[in-house]
Image (cartoon, rainbow, N blue to C red):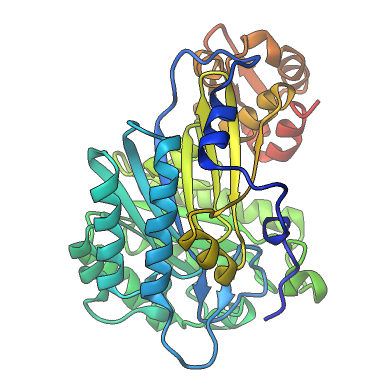
Length: 413
């Protein structure tokens, strides 16, 4: 596999100790945060069986038929976490998400060890949500139950489609029968799970998607994520673009999703997420509400708040580089303070994805800025019919939801 080099794998500047970095984070600044937001933990397991042609995530095919370097990578994650502890000291973790790649390539014993290592080093909220991404191509009978026994509370099953032709077009390693078996196992083994579906696939008709959606809803999933296929830079699809449905057809598919999920008792609480009562994804909600998250693993990102600033970190991207640096206690390749003038856009980029919209009190609490910092963007959005507003919140209209990228861009200036 050939990957374009990432800035996170280029030589960093002069070496900075953890003590120096923490002192830099804690020094006085232009912001004043009244309280720190909830903290989540994201763990990245970067390997997959095959790189999908649409995927721009930091995922790497595991080739050669050899066993994954599971134990060494788990050692690196433990060292990464231990080095990060001073930067989040005393803060409780509200959710954990184990993503990839294909995390279900790791053995249940490995996932058990990972969760045990986290529990031994961080205070966790009672009953916190621990999600694991799973690919039907790694499905084995009772494997999902073993993940549940290891401490995973929520599975996210990347089905994408139940149509064998469309699965082949997407480069997926599973077929429709494996997808159905994986969803059935997830339903039996877990109290809650996510089913991921994609639409506007190469050559897909509305009727074909309607059949896909009906099949997905026949499993009565507590949560459905429905993603429009987008052609991302630096992917195989960007180099060899497939013929995909036009925008009008894609909107017709989206209308089907909103209508059929509502009829099935699911609420569209986020632009791409539909859930039954009590089954919203708490981890993703923390992202959308501009909470904090510590990212561990190759290429993982962190967003951490301190009394006078908001900081972003990036781990080394290449798995081998990450492991070597993490074992040496220096997994962070880059970090930077989010500029004061960028915070309104960063907050709204996430918050406007939610059906309930943006709480102005939360905006001030998590950015240290007054609501007036949003005034220009809000006035433009309101004039275009993209939001409603009052003294407490800013809420996307149905039109704003449909034109979300245009709405978000109004807060970029």
